[in-house]
Image (cartoon, rainbow, N blue to C red; front, side):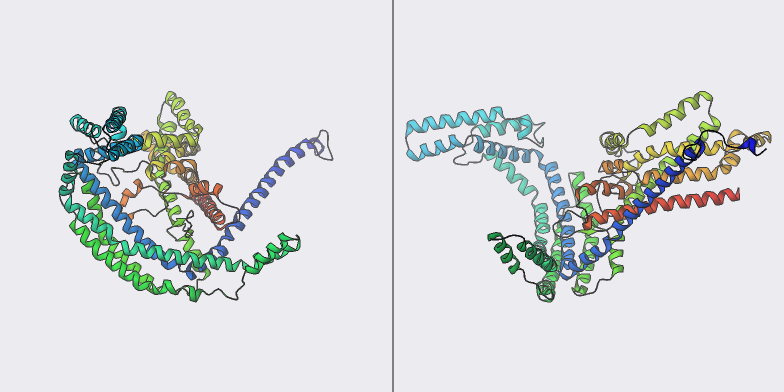
Length: 629
């Protein structure tokens, strides 16, 4: 009997065909595990090496005063946002009240510039002829100048001159501007009376708004001047400190290089090495004194800013001809108390700041994982805060799941249990075909089509009441979430249908035999029996969307900042950045071994850990549900 079951066939190196097949697949599996282990090891090694460099960077930023100057920079940036909103509101209101007058003034100004640029030679000739007082030469110069001006005015493109379209529907005003430009004496620079009248009308009509705008714009001058001064001091301290840290290595390298050359090259290297001074300790205490002493000026500048900006915002008008201007001013007034509160907190924190406080390793870790800023292209200071990237990824993934899960599960239930054969042959391939669409194509669709649709129709009265609507930016988290939902639907749908297929037929037959309808059978029997598989499908869908790169890189907006939580559910309409997007965007621009390079690897390690955690949790939940079943 044993001989009957012996393996037969030719052997190679002592192994038969079945053994070679088994070894081939087993070897491939083992090789995959080794490669995966090496990838994880490399990822961990590069990521962990981020923290020592980050710790040193934080200490340098503190001892050089950059941390203190950051308080001033944040105050100035927040102030500048208010100035920007004020300017936008001013010009929106100006256009609404005096659009024609502004169009006249601006268009005539454009003609002035064109004449000075294109008829410069004729202008010089006319000015010389007037100085010489030669009638014949003057007549000839005037004719040449007038001909040049007439040519310039006649050939001018109306859309270019009236670039903002303020005179688009007023042909009479446009003709007046052209006639004024045709008779304009650029040598004497005489402005036509109707242009001056238009400018006077604008100035008088917007006088109160102009005063408020000027007051707001001037309130931060002391703070901005202080910022410029302190930035230079802190940057100089940090540069010198870095040079001091590398002084010994640079000097040693120059001396080694000098030993390998002779003559003038050797003397040059020795001379350069002799200029490098190696200090026992960099004099931070001495160099930081100007920044420490500037705290009084800082307090005074913020006090001036607070007083003037409150007065300026108080003078802003309450009645408007422009709806956008009214909304902007309303936003300014809403931001004012938050801005004042932020100023007070900043002054309090900066007053407690000390350049020689110790920064421990825990602070280095927490400032990365809970930091709210990610700034890498700044010559001033590189900051790595992971929280905005994590928040953006989570919000976009949740949006995608909220859309994809009900659609996918509903479609799977319908196709598997309720549809006809004809519907099954059509719906299932159509849904699964979505997987064949490249993500780059979906990204372009989001930019060119979906983003414009959301931007246009979100202002419709029947949906404009929704949180975050009307949308002001077409590239946002909602756009990205909707596209990721489309990408997740085939995965969740297919796995859900497989889970439904795995429910024994006897379950449904017994339910129907007891008199239950198809819907009752699905709700009370089929879905509860397949719940573990459905949950697995949802978790795999989450893994699909959280690891997607190209779509979020193209349509999420790539704004690295924390969402404005005060918007409530409207936060979904704000732009954001993600973990995958930042790696794809910046990895190709960084040098190997730099702090930025390792920060991206650390982001990748966190992303890998999240994906691994989702899969492990899914397996445990499925196993537990399976045991209960």
